[in-house]
Image 1 (cartoon, helix red, strand yellow):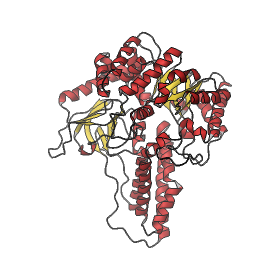
Image 2: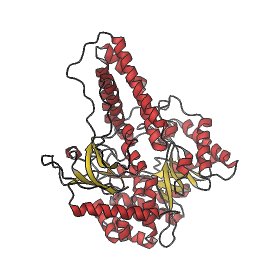
Image 3: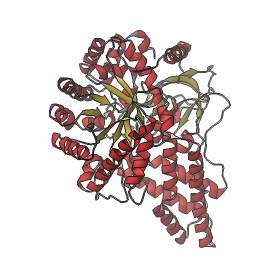
Amino acid sequence: MEQTEPVPTPAADAPRPAPVLRGIAAGPGGAVAPVARMSAPPTLPEREPEVADPEAEAGAARDALEGVAAELEGRAADLGGDAAAVLKAQALMARDPELRRQVEDGVRDGRAAAWAVWGACSRYRDLLLAAGGYLAERAADLSDIRDRAVAALLGLPMPGLPDPGHPHVLVAEDLAPADTVRLDGDRVLAIVTRFGGPTSHTVILARSLGIPAVVGCAGAEDLADGAVVAVDGDAGTVEADPDPEAAEGVRRRAERRRALLRASSGPGRTADGVPVALLLNAGEGDPGEAAAHDSEGIGLLRTEFLFLDRAEPPTVVEQTEVYTRLFRAFVGRVVTVRTLDAGSDKPLAFAATGPEDNPALGVRGFRAARVHPGLLTDQLTAIAAAERAAGTIGPAARVRVMAPMVSTPAEAAEFADLARSAGIGEVGVMVEVPAAALLADRLLPRVDFVSVGTNDLAQYTMAADRTLGALPDLLDPWQPALLSLVGSTGGAGERLGRPVGVCGEAAADPLLALVLVGLGVTSLSAAPPALPAVRYALARHTHAECRELAELALTAEGPEQAREAVRGAAHPEVVGL
């Protein structure tokens, strides 16, 4: 989504940030419009009142948290897909028994309800930030719960989105899921946040809405209300006070993009007819809604929504019912199910893995089966049963299953044996650690396909936490070192006749998609709004041209040089997307 608005003159005394700010490219597209900043969250009065009735204070705090949870659930009921899943997870956080216990402890220590809620939520938030990884990305969700509950207790306006009365670029320190799902794409032309990582809830939801976004953008706090900015969600840049020529360029680019993508439909193909499957990344939501998108199936079905925030694991019957509905919705198309990707960074109450100093390097993904093998065998049993059930009433999906966080050929063989013994015919693994890519020639003969998860592969290759907004250059998917590992995997796939997919966010970049195909990738999986541009880019380049672009990227000094080299050699209309 790319739009532009008339450019008003900012106030003379407005703070003037650096001309170009850089962050993490989080939602493709661009826009030029005035800034509208999120209002500041509620603050506690300087003087805390004395508590006359601790029981009443504790009750008020519980009611405020429950009110927040109910509001989030109410919003989720009107939504589907990732948006509903995110809000439901946040509602569960508001009802967390440990959080409520800490609030009640604060009241017993003499704190008023609002102060007790503030203190408990803030301590919980600090623990999440210290844990890093997936847990750190949930800190913004908890801050939102705190702010909403405190506003209710103090009788203050509920935190929410600005409404300047015209289309704008929304700028915030961070953006809570409850606000992101309410964004109106006709009003909010782009999002810029000071904090947040490439896999935060803000990013997930912005992509699902097709809104350009830049997160982890240092200097965003200096962008003043009404100041005009040009946001490039593909490059991860925010230009303050763009000149008229730059603003006009964004407008022309937006019009051209809309016209070109309206005509982009059908299977993915290069200009010379080489097929490249264009697939969806999917999670919780209405299967029919997901199936309505113009795609060739699902390249990544995240199954964590069935397991997270539960006291007990879902039964085989529960899982079978969910998978069956999905398989029936995707008749004649592929559905690639990723087995549970949980562990220390996505803790399960019923599957403790023990304390770990670095959860990103711990017992997660397929490794969790070493500690809790029953979770995996039950899931494989359910997937196989669902495939059979879906086929009893006619054609169903072509089901594939893959395991996350596989590092060695031996692990790949172990998973393949487990899946095939459960009755699953097509088995693969994720390539997310350098070891798997480096030994792809030995790993691929054990399975039927592999899928490269570029988000994790980038962090392990560059030794940079993917949730850390301070290192966007190291996490850039154009890094030649990362592309070299993708090329190692793609080359092995070509030699052995095995499909190689990419289901990380790199697949959503039209120019980078060309490079990936040139490296031997045969399928690309991304959020639905990204597929038309990728389809269009492929259709204007032959497979040989994709290989030439891949070579330019591989031999570049760094990500910026790789991007510019490919931009200079790609079809001009694709560069203009």
